[in-house]
Amino acid sequence: MASSSTKIALSSSDSNNATTWQNFKRLVSYAKPYKLGFVAAILGMLGYAFIDVYFLSKLQPLLDEGLSGDNVDFMKWAPLFIISAFIIRGLAHFVANYCLSWVGNNVVADLRQKLFEHIMAMPVAFHDKQSTGALISKITFDTEQVLNSVSKSILVIVQQSAFVLGLVGLMFYYSWHLSLIFLLIIPVIAVIVTLVSKRFRKVSKNIQGAMGEVTTAAEQTFNGHKVVLTFGGQQREFDRFGKINKHNRQQRMKMMATKSASVPIIQVIASFALAFVFYAITSDTLRDTISQGTFVSVITYMVMLLRPLKMLTNVNAEFQQGMAACVSIFSILDHEKEKDNGDKKLARASGTLSFKHVDFSYVKSDTTQEVKLALSDLTFDLSPGETLALVGRSGSGKSTASSLLLRFYDATSGEILIDDTNIEQFELKDLRKQFSYVSQQVVLFNDTLSNNIAYGKPEATEAEIIAAAKSAHVMEFSVNMPQGLETNIGENGALLSGGQRQRVAIARALLCDAPFLILDEATSALDTESERHIQDALQTLQQNRTSIVIAHRLSTIESADKIIVMDQGKIVEQGTHQSLLAKQGAYAQLHSFQFE
Ligand code: ADP
View 1: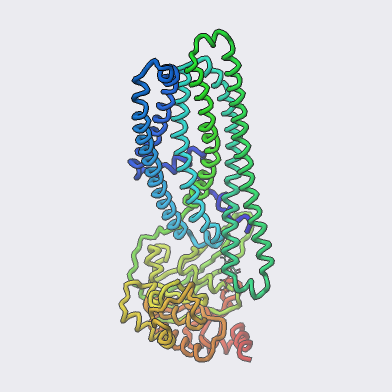
View 2 (view 1 turned 90 degrees about the vertical axis):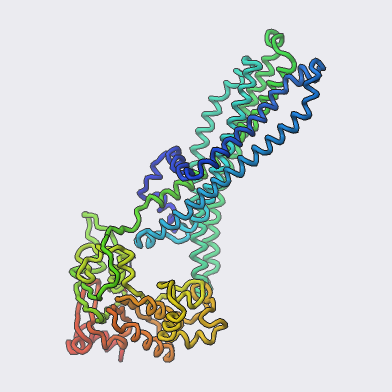
């Protein structure tokens, strides 16, 4: 599990191989619809920096002309100038921050939506491998990280670079000798920044992974809350979470260590340059050519440069963090979606279904080794309205067969036909509309009973919902609920019992009224009252539908038109209940196990 999130990051995506610059360009392309806001933000940032530089450019005249009393006008206009400059500066600040955040929030909302839709459109095999927690962390944490880091970085880079350029310009304007000394340190700073950014990139990527691990661990434990309590696993879970939590903290501290060390190092180097300037000024030639005002101004500019240099160094960490999050998001977006190449429409199938020599393996074959087949040479035909029961030990491939029908996976070889057409030729949406699926693990949403019933047919009228609820014996218990069918049933239907949940699932399938039914029968024994209701409801559901029943208890399938006994993905016997009993083979054996 520890590697679950890196699994995604290491997947075969382009985004990992792309340079930071390419990823940044890709991110910026998401901002295209919000160009105007972006331009306004940049103008705001430049305006802000310009006012600051302009202010500082008045330092020398203030010292040499204003304060010395040589230029009376200068001092007269100063108060007015100060107020107007601060008003403009304030406006620029507002525009820069507001517009940047407007663009950033829009981009992140778009990215988050795209990511959500993309994850939902991924093949089932992708979801089999990924931990939900890591995916959730991408949608919540990584997108937020992009917003915070990248927009803050842009703000600092544009505003502070403009400020630095302005200051350096002023310095050169007043004394290029002194400025040159100061500028000698820039290559040294550049080398340090490059080294540090490499480390930032590495640590940021680890942080991304570590955050995914935290969510995964929490999500898994909360989901299995009852199991943890029952088996007294609290301490083990605390320890496991503690380890992951510690790893996350360590990664963050590494980041902080690099961040905290890089700024003072750069400032110390800058202080050398500053010290050298002080030393140089003592030489007579320089002292004669420079006024007091110029000297104080240039020194002030140099000191003023330290802060933006610090911010620009720090922004690197911020930016690398944002880009690491970006890579993590892009690596998902670059994953191929579920294939939907079929172009045939299918409004409502007549109900014939055949499997022709279907092989399937969960593992992609590479020629070097033989892969284990989950289904091997599965062949059968069903006419409209017939019921097929699949029986066999657990792991024999029964559920896999139904997954192939819904195209959660595609057959490795052979064909599955509906109405004599290979199911891969249909549009996925149309194909899946042909099936109602009632499984033993009923998934219910945190919504009202009636909305849960109408999940497959949101346009259903109230009368239709009530009719389905009646046929599936949901009414029997819903009348005792505070708001009847309009009662909210809690997260994953926490308020309902196992039998009640199944009845809701049956009502849902009834309302869908699809021509095929896949029924993964409950293994758990229900009380006789529930059992009778459910059997009743199921019979109603199977009427006029081609049904595939994954049977765990043989008592319920005696009337099936066909029974297929499977073992290790192969058909070992097929026939009707009577003919199979007469054969005295595998089915008869299973039967005698269950009834003796
Ligand atoms: P049944 O429904 O009869 O209990 P399944 O169809 O679930 O059997 O499983 C058939 C075989 O495929 C088993 O060996 C099982 O371990 C394997 N299998 C099932 N689901 C997956 C999956 N998502 N990934 C890899 N192997 C799987």
